[in-house]
Length: 299
Ligand SMILES: C[S@@+](CC[C@H](N)C(=O)[O-])C[C@H]1O[C@@H](n2cnc3c(N)ncnc32)[C@H](O)[C@@H]1O
Image 1 (spheres, rainbow, N blue to C red):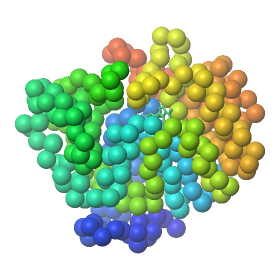
Image 2: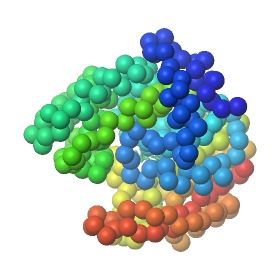
Image 3: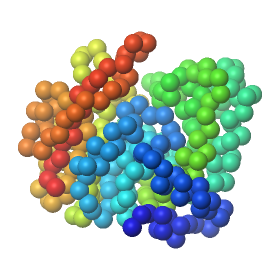
Image 4: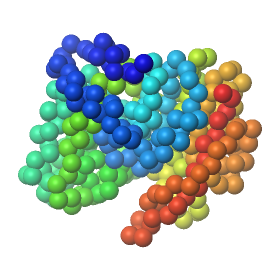
């Protein structure tokens, strides 16, 4: 069964009538469903590989949900989706609660007058000051699509500080957001550290972890996704928690770069490796093929 039926059934009051044709078109389109956010390390392009390795279960737990590429392209009955980035989780929660009304509210920020440098910095300042959940969520989407390279960067004070992106006409991801809002009715979104998320998994669940990558070399350290880094200590802790869950009968799949360190900490897991084309350096010719590994603990 597809999740089409369950999403329609779980529609909340406050949603407009579903545009069924559009929804069906999206569901049966060729290729994976695209997340509405640009996100570093997004798994959209390799989601088919990940799906091959994911065992069935009654709930998928994702402690590093990011833009949600795996959530969008799998069909579990329910989801526990978390991330340490509070702005990201707030956006998903507001979108889940308000659906199309929120999507139309966001549209107001995607007008030519908002795509000017001065206005970008004014709205970025407003975002950093805002205490209003809905305004903050819409501005986070605006910054994601109008900022440089979709980068999500914060200064030491926790303020968003990505510079203006200079795009001719930033794309407003209306259809992608509507799809996300509907599928989000099957999910619970929580802002929490992976150490907390991992211990919430119970037998019957499947866990998919997409932590910030282990650096390929000491000069390619791209681990700053939100304030606070993710170092080798956290990578080791994650592998230990995965092994512990597997012992309890909860399978855990982890993605990472294929390096010696990664193979060392994931020993005992079943490994699948392949090459991925990705932009990993800042210069123009940074198009490299990096080795990617999927480690299945238990399952
Ligand atoms: C590689 S990205 C996930 C990408 C996601 N799979 C996708 O397709 O978009 C890593 C995520 O881990 C989150 N993160 C970083 N440190 C974390 C921590 N200590 N606990 C939970 N999440 C963390 C980041 O905010 C980021 O969204």
